[in-house]
Length: 280
Image 1 (cartoon, helix red, strand yellow):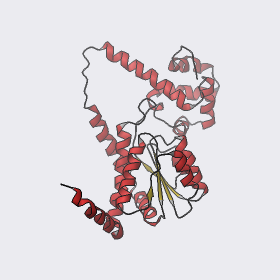
Image 2 (cartoon, helix red, strand yellow):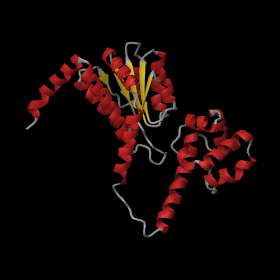
Image 3 (cartoon, rainbow, N blue to C red):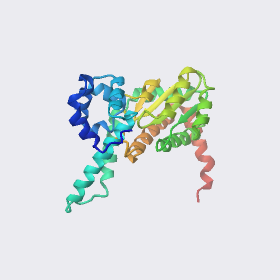
Image 4 (tube, helix red, strand yellow):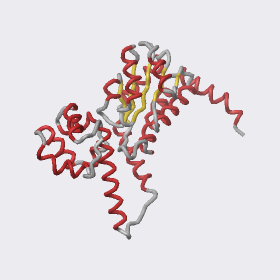
């Protein structure tokens, strides 16, 4: 990783003119959209700047960063420091500790508007016909994965929620076209998740990816891809918004199953009856 003292955005702005035409194109895009870049996947940046993924990796190496994620982290840190300095300079700036609620509501509305109900119905079809369902996630996305696993267990579905990714890899290696893998990943670029899905593709399992971006590796590996809006940068990875959006999509799948399939609805009602006596 770049160990120099020059801020990365300054380096991009001042040295971009001396780069090759393709690298200069990336430098110009990052200089004009630094905040947006911190929340992009490498595929999204490639599409937005109209250059290849390989060129982006070459740009990172030019700046002595091994990966695009490392470059994004450096940009995010620099922006964070700049914002902190501006905040400190303004002694009259009022802090609103409830601003997150507005962000969550906006994100949920965006997730709702982007939700493809035809795809939700296709996912429901796959769920009810699957021999078994493996649900994978790491980090904050694990919250939504565990939530969906809980819902599927209530519905009497054969659901597995491995928390150890080695175990997830072993499970994926033994699936076939009768099985299904559901992956939660806000970035869509988590290596552990991608490795599991690649195995699932080789064994012909149905794959549903739930991510925060349209273009990413998880989406590319998925039979069906659903969007759960997230605005995570490398510094805000695992934000509440991404988790809440993922849970809302998971619950939509569950509700669709409940109202569409009488046998699922019966099993859910039986599960509710079985634990009602535990309530005081």
